[in-house]
Image 1 (cartoon, rainbow, N blue to C red):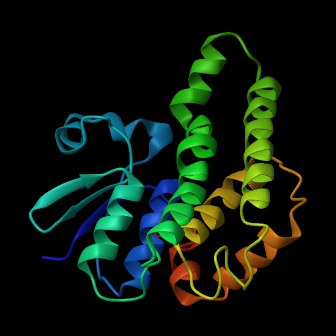
Image 2 (spheres, rainbow, N blue to C red; image 1 turned 120 degrees about the horizontal axis):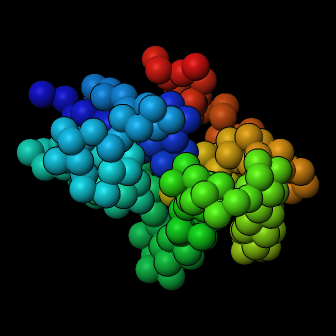
Length: 210
């Protein structure tokens, strides 16, 4: 049986995993869970992932959760281009850049967080403005973090986990009306989107896209 990816076309965390599956040449089945309809809170999905978050990947007789953990598992177990450098220092720097996005920027745009802001009485302009400000601050820091690196990608001539997180996050940035004022980040995005693994994984190219 091929792995099954539980996701949603607009989920940037699911986007990350789709890219890696494509890069590694792993054929997989989709199981879609519409976030705005609350399908990720259904009992059958909570039995797989008690957090009720996506993505989750059924693979090798187990269920993996958390997109970065899934990506690193695939990197360690499936042949193909490496997502992390062999050198420990370089590897730590790539992980730090990826986590800057996945842990510090992205979570605050999750529907659960935005709904809590609405429940606290913020109107839509305030909710969107708050999310936009967090994205802008985070991408400012990301841009400075990789400023000393050369090459078409975040850390040189090969795609790493940092590029995968960046490209997915820029989708969110556009959705929240962020002023994309980072030429290097946009150049990295363009280089990545020229690769088949990224374009096939893009939200608009998924069967459940709306």
